[in-house]
Each structure stands twice: as structure tokens, then as C-alpha cells.
Length: 414
Image (spheres, rainbow, N blue to C red):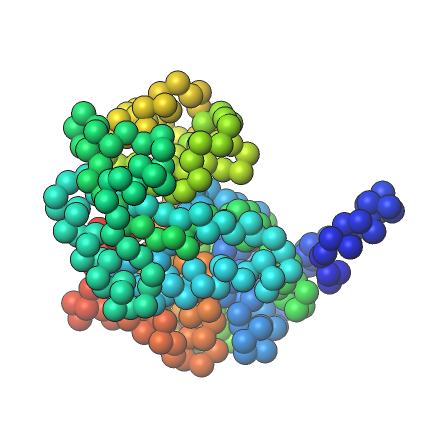
């Protein structure tokens, strides 16, 4: 793998860019691997990467039914933060945020991490109490956040309207080192690093069955033939239930669509991320000038990856109250992604009833921010059988009533 640098760019410019090589290989699958990861999104690729980097497990295949990063990794609104209430969540998301800080250097690939800061607006007295509680919890967890008043909010976001007709801005939970990253680049960077270790990334390869023998996984059937493995990781976001059914167990989650849109590009006017739970929307400005807008999940179970008119109306109507200037903008494009939601709005990172099979699912609306931490913890779990980052997020918690309730800290109503 060639090293990317300013000198490499200059050298290739002089050579009319004829010396660049493919970022990752596209091989045919082998008959057997030590580990198969199903799902070439951010979480699956990060798991494979840390298996190789941290544990030397490099005979790995990452299988994707579509194209690399074509699912939720390429369809989210790129927000990164770790201001969660419960201790297990804060540990996992803060691990991810910390890894994001140096991810470009680690992967030798610019993921465009931008620690511009994230504000979660409080627009009711209930939210004030909730976010102040979270700020106190974060202080105990070692996560740097703070409660700020409306004057400070206005200073950080000059375009905001503090005196909304329904819900005035009463303050906010501010995480200065939160921010955004380029979602595609995160997937591409991990894929390039995995390929450089000799791992196989196999696209257009759909899993049609999971094979087992005496309660232990032995391989998968795919549209490119049968592939054997010692361990299997299922990391497929909104289709987790279908893969789990192939493996012989059920998951306590449901699939719904989460939609987003971007406006036409405009001059820089907002250099932080703002999330508003009460009016049900969140917004940031991309490097290209587009206003990136998202809201809550659809109110019904579905597997669509399209947008809908009612989402535009509900989300934009809500945000126009807080940001009146966006009423004059034109929408550039809209899309949807399929998310899987658990009852406590926390993920599942766990062993499964099928020995040798592991599941990473249930991230709901907050999966992108957790990619490096999720991959780190899942790699440790798959390699050693235990990880402090994942031990609270097992399947058993639903049977035992050990819920990790993050319905408020998730940032939008569900």
C-alpha cells in the first residue's frame, strides 16, 4: 500500500496521476477464512481492521451484498459525540470519539474529522433538568461536556432564534470536541487499511444462509458460493433480524427508516452541530456549504431507503422555528437509511446462541459516531471472548431486565 502524503500528491501530479493504485483489492472469495464479517459498512470494516491491527487476525473476509459503504454508513448525517447518560454508553462512545481524533493519521487516509462542537438544545424545563443531569454524569465519566445558557448558545450559533413561537431556547448541553467526519471517507479508509493487511473485501456477495454443526457456526452460503469460517460476525444494521434468523435466533429489535436531506449550498453561516429534540430536528453545515438536516425515524416499520414528503414537512417546519433563515433555502437532495431499534435505544454487541457467531446491531439513529469504538470492542470480543466495552450490551440484558436506557441521550425522539 502506497503511503498518502503531500509529497505523493505532488509526485503524482508531475506524473499526470498515472501512478495511483486501487485503494483496496476486489478478490474472489477463498474457500475458508478464520473470520467472516458480514457487512462492509463502517462497523464491519472497523471490526475487521482492529482484528488485524490489535490481534494479528488477518485471514478475514468482509462480505457485502451491495457496495462498500452503501448502507447506513453512506446515508447518515455524520454527527460525532459522546455525551450519553449511562456509564456503558459513555465509555463506548467516548472511546469512539477519541479514536476519531487520530483516525486520519492511523489509517493514513483523511476522514475529515472536524471537532466543531455539538449543542443539544434545551427548549423545555424537562430538557433543562435532563441535560444538566447528563452534564453531571459526563463529569463523573470523564467525558468533557458542559451546560450553557441561551446567551452562550447565541454566541456559538448566531443564526439561531432564541425566542421561538412555541419553544424558546433555554440553554443546551455543549460538547466542544464533538463534531463531524466524512462518512464515505471513514469506510474507504478502513477498507484500504484492511486490504493492505491482506483481508478480502468481497462486494456484490449476498449471504443466503448460515451453516452450523453441533451448535457451532462453520460457514455461510452466498451468491458467490459457500465459504467456511471459524468465527462469524453479523454487522448488517437494518437487516440484522434476517441474518439472525438464518443463524437460528431472534433479535429484540425492529427496522424503521431514518430520513435526511441537504439544502442547496450557501456561504458559511453555522460552524457547529445543533440538535433540537423538542422540535424534532438537527442541522449542521457541510464543507461544501449544504445545510445537512435530519429528524426522527418513521412512525412505522419499513425497509425503504427513499425520502418522503411528510418527513420534509415535519422536519423543516420544526427547524424553521429555530432557524428562520432556512425557510428561504431550496432542497438539494433527500434520502433514507434503514436503522434497527432496540427497546432501550442501546446497541447489541454480543455473543449469540450459535457458538462462534457474534452480533453487532441495534444502533438506531446513532451508529456512525460509534464506528471506531464499536469496531475496537467487537474485535476484542471476537478475538478473546470478552471486552469491557461490550460486556453491558449483551443479548442477555433483555432477558434479565438490565436495560441501558438512552431514549433521551439519543438526541431525537423515537
